[in-house]
Length: 339
Image 1 (cartoon, rainbow, N blue to C red):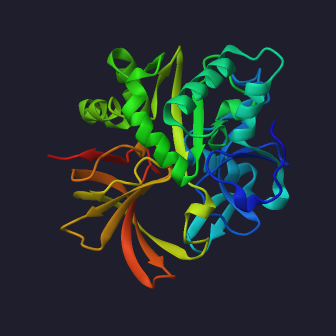
Image 2: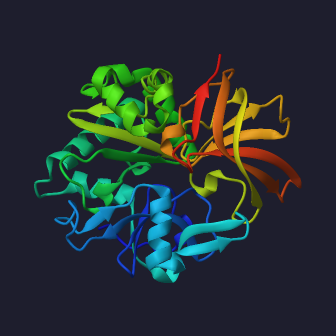
């Protein structure tokens, strides 16, 4: 377990918190209210009734399952956020028992004098190759996911995270150029691609061929040695020009939209966004997602079709309003190029 960090304002995507109730939450996004973090339930203690009984935790994957679990057992973690205009999953600072730092975790793996697991060694090896091939610093990269929490199995994935806008852009630019020459890194092809698409986009079997074309071009994911890996690129609060409360949102329901991408320069980040033009809705300006699966999804100049939740966004600093489509909150949300 990593050391405790007192200042919750520094917590961003990739960090985890363990609460006084023994629940494990994953931090979502970069902007948080004072004395509270927006975080989604990820692991809950198990009493030995599941296949996870040997590690003491059960993973809760579906977003609706997470909310139902909290509503039935720990409703205090469901909190109404005025700027969001709805109830969100969150953890107040006085409910945080410990904070897990991805960069600290990777540092401990690298510096361990004891033998580490095959998965941990593969994670270190992959990180070393990526640092070398992209010219970022070790302070910019960490390990998240089940390894950070300390409950990984030998068949778990390698989840890496890179922090800071400048480091992330350097990482992505260099990785895009060098990925085919990095030893032991494989892109998704063949059966692996088919399985990956079925897992990630199983709700859209009729679009499987389109998703295969998309997924096989992405550089932030793949296979290293025998492990699947994914890299999140995450900004820090210092990269942003606004704080919690500067922007507010009003939900407008599910919407199917089409348009053109005019700017994809933020598409590699988690959260990601695409600036768009939409003839049928001129005030619809952005596609956004907090889910890693929507990174690298479409490129500038591409026509698209997307299903997600429409939001009216009010920017109180700039005194303007626009619409955006939020992707990934429901299993049937999608984003594909359109002829």
